[in-house]
Amino acid sequence: MKVKKAAIIGYGYMGEIRRKVIEANPCLELVGIFEVNSQIRSKITGCRLYDKAEDIFKDVLDIVFVCTPNSSSPELCIAGMNAGKHIFCEKPPGRDVKDIEDIIKSEKRNKKIKLMFGFNHRFHPGIIKARAIINSGRLGDIVSLRGVYGKSGGKNFPSSWRNDRSVSGGGILLDQGIHMLDLFLYFCNDFEQVKCFTSNSFWKFAIEDNAHMIMKNKSGQTASLHSSATLWKHTFKLEMILEEGYATVEGLLSKSGSYGRERLILGKRQFEDEAYAVGNPEEEITHFDRDLSWDLEVKEFLDCIDQDKTVDISSSQDALKVMKIIEKAYIDSQTYQEVYK
Image (cartoon, rainbow, N blue to C red; front, side):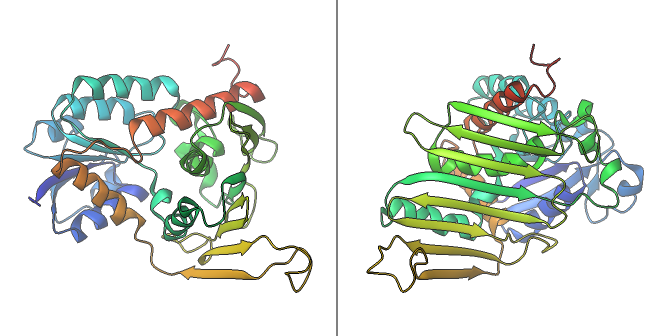
């Protein structure tokens, strides 16, 4: 694989992670970074520091990693693709469905360009193993899904750009719940019926701090999600009920480690004469201690570029599908009803 030159736009939390991934990959070379915050800019060393984002698109580069707030990423993705650069963009792909639709229009015009979004939860070890087991048919088809994904805010949470709707486009559902919804779609393809309740009763921002969703698809599969900024304990739990048992991924390997140790719990449906205790089947538990999700998704992206393969995981169509689910949720809950009249 030929070494590809890359640059990063936005050097916040995700920009730092992407730099580590780039520098750890022998097939990537970090050329430079653009960051608007002067305090952060002053601490960037070891590579070129661009004065403007446009300078990146004029440079001799192969890939641009877009790690900016939601309001900026669509314009940057489009400009990058028009300049002939492959684009890896963090989630969400913008503030609303129109943003991702605009990106897709540019993608269709630039047919040789590869575009991928950072839905890295698909590449977490617990999710990878759960998907392999489900695809094997060992426990039958999925009957229903239930997810809880939340955080506690924090000291600097009120001042975060994520709580400025003009920048973010939405609250905790769009910011964090989108990952769980993407996993729902990854396992069950789509959900046509969506019901949602949102509130902002605690933080009282102009965005939701809690969202409760219930969904159903044409196959009769159902799913429910609680996405929250008021759990006080960082929580990730995805429960999958199958015809012959269940699979639960809980805990999440993360930079902070605050979501606990990631593990996959498997249980097989048992009748009274098979189980030691009614309703309590034997369980198989696997723990995971290495988070390779960031590296694996970038490897997948590089493979698509080198082999000229269609991006079929964390693609623009995946991004569009999950953004449409979120739009349905906001419409149903009458959240931001001035936007969805």
